[in-house]
Amino acid sequence: MAEVLFYHLQGRPLEQVLPTLLERSLSRGWKAVVELSSRERLAGLDDRLWTYADESFLPHATAAEPDAAANPIVLTTNSDNPNGAQVRFCVDGVRIPDALDAYERVILMFDGDDPNALASAREDWKKLRTLGIAATYWQQDETGRWEKKA
Image (cartoon, rainbow, N blue to C red; front, side, top):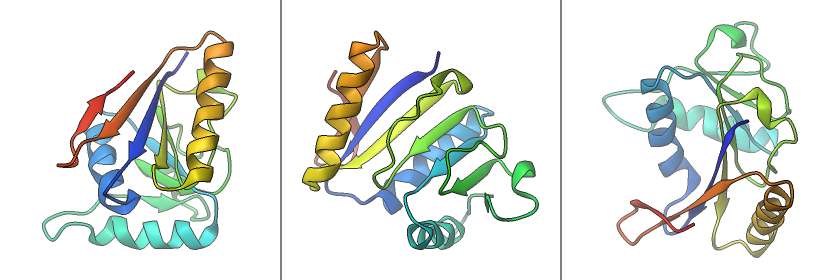
């Protein structure tokens, strides 16, 4: 069963926070799949991962590319796992998947300033609790560091 983590974004947008978490996943030897809710958001994140830092980039592909399976990070708008990733990021309003056993870690990242995103995250949290699945809840502090809250 996957370890499930909820990341409550505050003060910093997904585009600033996600690259660091993807780097950590890669440093652990994991492949990652990032599911977004729209092709437009996918295109924006695709561009961002190539340019987020002057000294580096994150090697990745979109699920539509023929070599997606060979990449350590794949961006998708579907619930598939094209690169056999061990960690799944659910961002931009994407909900926690039902098939948790396919991953070592599932991460839901949600915008703390969006009432709909908060409500969806709460629903997913309650659903996991009802199913007896443990999850941890992380929130950004004023400096952008993650603090475990639950």
